[in-house]
Image (cartoon, rainbow, N blue to C red; front, side, top):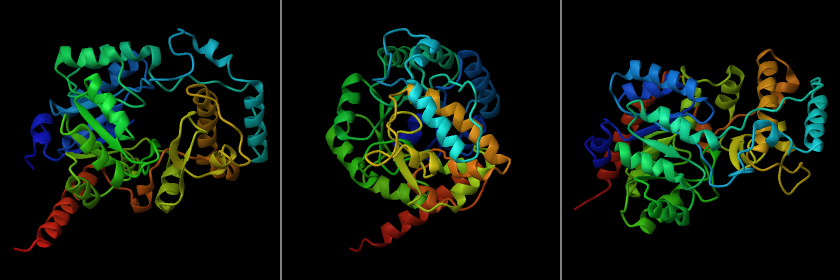
Length: 372
């Protein structure tokens, strides 16, 4: 394909793949797409190692990085340490998790662990400094308008800045801030997402920004025909995430992969129980325990909820991998509604090629529907 966005980013096919796994990023880029590494959870030193490895694998082919610096989060601007942030977690939340584990025959820890904040926050600028020292071809931010230093770094180094949005109002703010690429993400998406469907939010965003910048479609897209449908709506390509979780290279725990392969499109839910912001993930006893507007326990704001939830969920994953039935009932992971179409473990390269073939078949069907 020789679309404008393919030429702009030096790719063969306008398929952008977000993943926390460097192996997926490299495989997609080497197959002609554009891999994007989720980098917010790394230290600057770790990120440098990950990007150096990708550089060696892709040999100059384009890839990018996504660093989450939310517009709003607990403690923003206060320069709090992890200890100071953890002091804001009420004891009742720790007690609730202990009781939830006990109900599933998991012995609670005497001293519940509190993890680091799973967002770049104050480390965002340092992570970005590491990233621009590598040949990245795009930097992205989720959860709000990118910070000023990201916009400035993009202009200084000639690197496009992308931003994810879930509503046309957000897209207008992003364009006004100076972003170069909008990812219009529907509620079907895994991870943090809004409430509007992909089929609605994509044309809304395109119409609202009036061709100011290219728009990628996201949310539940796991096949080439879905991608073709979004291009028919006016999108320049697709931004994908969940589909890579069941690839051979992915970081996903084997028991979670098995859950995804068995799941239907109705087996996900938007829950604040993992991060404090609505994020679509597999339904489990964990998400049931934090259900809003029902008997569920209220959640803490970002990043406090992730600080208390992530260490416990990692422990649950280890127990689930060993066959613990209670842990398997609790285990969950980010996944979009497209999970119902993810039914086989494949190499990431094969997923890219299947996207291409499926896209071309859909384009032929669309062309064949037009008569003189």
